[in-house]
Image 1 (cartoon, rainbow, N blue to C red):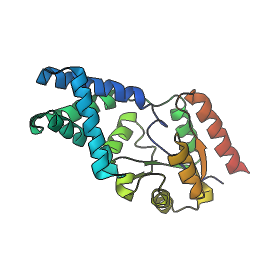
Image 2 (image 1 turned 90 degrees about the horizontal axis):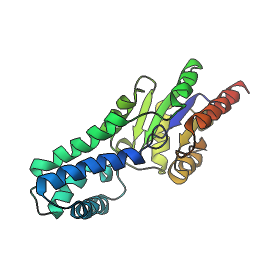
Image 3 (image 1 turned 30 degrees about the horizontal axis):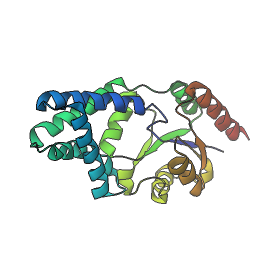
Image 4 (image 1 turned 120 degrees about the vertical axis):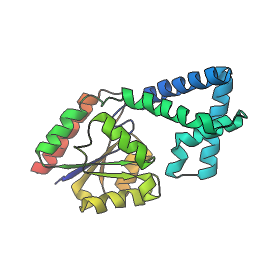
Length: 224
């Protein structure tokens, strides 16, 4: 019997890629106007900043911190990063969070789970602060009972520590939980290795149809 559903967040409950492109574009416009540089020069510097952050920090939550990307972008350009880094960061996330929308079918799925007393939680890479902000922006804070981030776990998916912490918070056995995520390796294989029933979500396919089938599957498991 399924008693809990764990969601990945990015590209499982909402679409990440289009928002990222738009938000990055806004930051590029800001920096190019402020410094009087070409977009190509900014993009080269940003690629360096992102790459250097990940090389320096490795596979940890802080390697996704866009404030560090911004800081290193400006350092690459030979500019004092302190006056502008935070403004870049806030421009990115301000644009991103303002435009976030749940995939079709998510709201109805969550309503059905709640009606059946099924607990819902999120297991996600990245830092706790920004993932909390995303959950608030999507309007699902009251639906989600628990949250595990890679910052809290100290490891990124598919590390077993992430899924073990989920089960610990839920106080449930793996067979009582269903995991939904878009990454075959990080989500599906990671959860399955922990003994959790895992289902892959495809962000480029109709969400309402996928979440409708998932709801029926979970509720059928509860009746069996």
